[in-house]
Image (cartoon, rainbow, N blue to C red; front, side, top):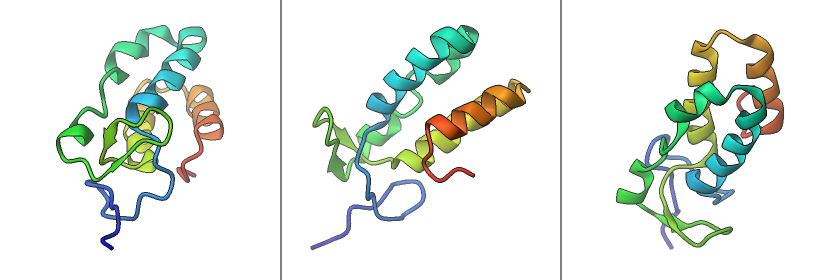
Length: 99
């Protein structure tokens, strides 16, 4: 059986929660913290649907991008906002081994 690997990092997807499901949680969190960042984060993981390798265990949608790679891309957006406290809180809440 072939391993279900992330299209970005080529590592095994061991926690198959799709970017859409993670994004919903991030947006809910950002609504209170920094709503101006929401448009730059929305639909960030859509490329994972075109090259899918597995299905999300939450919504059953196709996915190909692991949670680590998706949240790594999102933390870069937050980091570019130059709000260190927001970045630290994000890493603590959405811990996909970003530290």
